[in-house]
Amino acid sequence: MEDMKKRKLGEAAGDEEIPSEEELRLLLDPLPKPQLVHLLSKLGSQYPSIAEEIRSIASADPVHRKLFVRGLAWNTTSETLYAAFLVHGEIEEGAVIFDKATGKSRGYGFITYKQMDSAQSALRAQSKMIDGRLAVCNLACEGLSGASTTQDLTQRKLYIGGLSPDITSEKLLRFFGKHGEIEEGSVAYDKDTNESRGFGFVTYKTVDAAKKAIDDPNKMLGGRNIIVKLADSHKGKSLQTLLPTAEVPMSFPMAAGYPQPGNAHASTTPVGYTYPQTVASYTASAYPSVPAPHALYPIQPQISYPPVALKEESLGFPSTQVGIGGYPYYISKQ
Image (cartoon, rainbow, N blue to C red; front, top):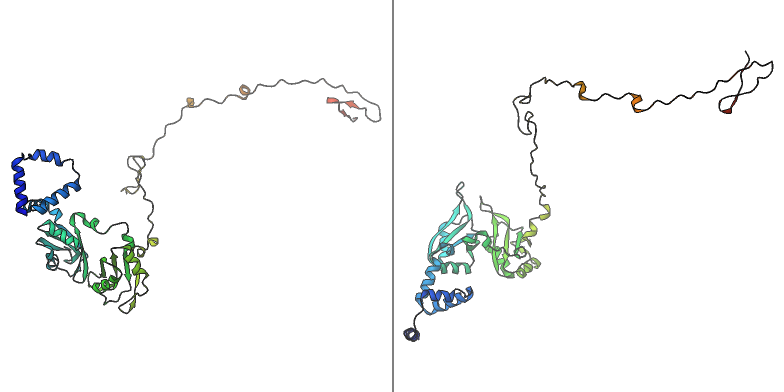
């Protein structure tokens, strides 16, 4: 069948002129990406040489072959990590990252495959149980952003508290696996002693599975009643310290001789001034003299009144005289 197709293509090529690369490029350039992918996939599936060419081009850049693996146990070695991912294809390099100061694992590592399709195979099996911990991988170029950061993550990630010390990650995942498919999860271990800290996390692939785990009345694991709630609510957002509004320091211009805030001076005497300072005297002509009162207010003329004549009276009551303004007054005899 394959030979017949090739023969027909050969006959067609013999009858018609084969277009140049530039002519084909002009034909392909306006096509959308999905259509180009479909075309190359179809050709690659029919002709092994085209498939090999596609694989070679895709694997040329290590960005498409390097995986970031997180959630590793503190005792996981590079050899253990290497062996866990070898099932997907030939590995170019792989290693667990260790702290340079303490020499202990930092809980993550990297795997680089030789072929891109091997990396894609590993990504399809995103979660792996390694040394009792459920490790998760994604493309290294995506970093932590390649992790499950969808908007419903807060509704799928659960906090599991009150765990018994003998509860391992495998037991935890087996217990909660009955509610739905788990994306990642593990018991929290102490980095120094590698002992359980009494709590863990489980992230489901669906919100419905997480709701089932929360609503399940049977929360007995390892002989203890455990706590199951959304991990986001466990953070205690209401207890977070409210940070004060950021203050922008502002500098104000000050005289050159005075100390600036925060800058200590060796001498208490301001630099650049000598004491006592001489003050210039004020000149007499600096201010105008105050005008005399008569210059501001004119003098009112005096009003004269006619004199009043006095006459001697005989004994008896004094005669009534008319005074100023028509009011009577009495004059006693001497």
